[in-house]
Amino acid sequence: MPSKRDYYEVLGIDRNATDEDIRKAFRELAFKYHPDHNRGDGAEEKFKEANEAYEVLSNTSKRATYDRFGHSGGSGFFGRDSEGFDFGFGDIFDAFFGGTTTSTRQAPQHGASLQTRLSLTLEEAAFGCEEEIDITRTENCSECQGTGSKPGTQPVRCPNCDGAGEVRRVQASIFGRFTNITTCPRCHGEGRIITEPCPTCRGSGREKQHRRISVKVPPGVDNGNQIRLRGEGEAGTRGGPSGDLFVVVSVIEHEHFERDGDDILYELPLNFAQAALGTEVEVPTLDDDSKLKIPAGCQTDTVFRLKNKGVPHLNGRGRGDQLVTVSLVTPESLNKEQRRLFEELADSLGTGKKKRRKR
Image (cartoon, rainbow, N blue to C red; front, side, top):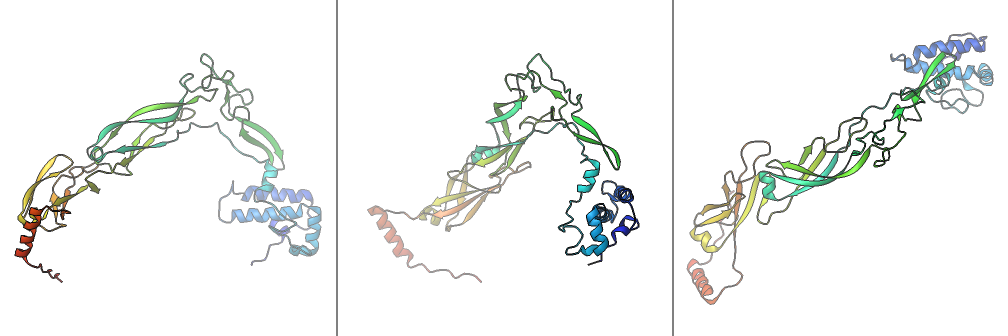
């Protein structure tokens, strides 16, 4: 670790310096290197170093110990985080400046956003619709229009801060006179005081309201999509704009269809005769029934594609497709005539041979 510089050297004074010399030297260095005034490289460390030196040399007993033992401080040592020398980075500066802070009148604030859910059928999500939802939100009071004052009255200027919303106090320190600016404790920065509160909102200027809002759902939305309704959230404060309402879409499971992106999946059941001989069937789609030709010898898991029978692309042109997967259905029970025919068919077909997989 680098060795500490001599405290007298840090402050630029000799060992016979008076208390006033020490205060004057630190005052000059504090102004020169304090981060609020100097953001250059090394300024912060130099300020801490001067701060540390002043803490020791301005204290009679600590100075005497330092003059005798140096940085070792006898049984201990002088420096940050030591037992005899414990101070925060801004403590000593705050002591001189009186904890100077700044405060401005509270600015308009944007209202909070809200979120709600909307359940839709697959058809409603696919083709879009217009729905109504019920929400509860905070609005400006309908009686006082958000002023918080009883109708016919007006807020008055705060006598404590004269409408400024802040209180200024001049304090003297070794660095001179400084102004301490704080938020007015009486009006809380508003600059005005309500003398006759509105009986409806009790002076808050806000109230809860139940609203029914119309939502236009665009075609192609899916689970988890959000529809943003600007300005339909909580009311802002101090004239700030209202927040937004986010409507999260939830699509109800369909009885026959599944959705895969913008494609629709449908499982088509066929019996052995239809698959072996081929047939033409009516397949349900999101629009209406469509004819589908099944070729002879169709196998299970064969997939047919119905072009442009899927979900419209969200915020775009065109649609997905409908994918129809064939599923052969084995009858669970047969009457005597059906059993006889199947037995004859089995005898005529013989034992089936498994096809080898192509490598």
